[in-house]
Amino acid sequence: MSVGELAGLLVAVFWAVLVTLLAVVLVRLSQVLKEATVLVSAVTEQAVPLLTEAGAAVRSANEQLERVDEITANVQDAAANANALSSTVAATLGGPLVKVAAFSYGVRKAVAKQNGTLTLPAQPGEREELARLIRAEVRAATAPKSGLLARVRRAVRG
Image 1 (spheres, rainbow, N blue to C red):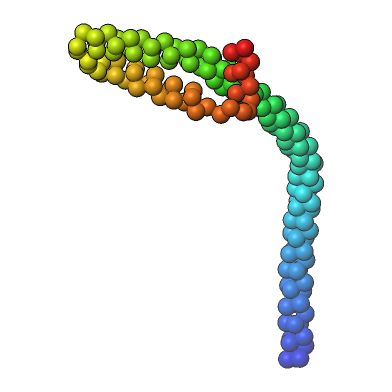
Image 2 (spheres, rainbow, N blue to C red):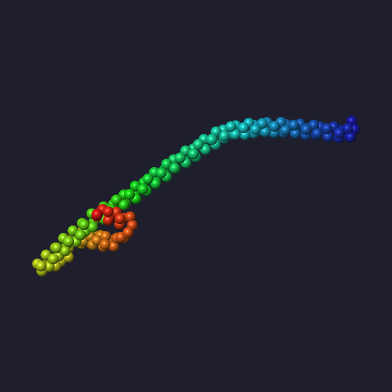
């Protein structure tokens, strides 16, 4: 065997080993691609129902939020009605009570003046009550003469 034949034989063996290695790599690559295809199809099969369920959950949450909005609106209406009612009751009953309290204080003051002893209320609670009554009377006197609350007050008073 000559040197040329030996070199040719070495090149042929090298190419045979190279082709064998490439064939093994290609076989493994095809197996990986098959597994990836199976994995992608499995994920697709599971993702579609999950997306459907997620859409249903979002729709359900949206319906619940609409219900909460309705409830919130009803609570706001109820709070406004309660506020108007308390204002009406305060205007209806508060004014006469303030006037009675102021009248009784005036009578006590006049009696004390006749007796020669003019004093302010001695108890801090009485002073605070007197100050509260005076503030309420001033508020009632300076209340707006127009608007819904004024119309309700006039209707209640007759």
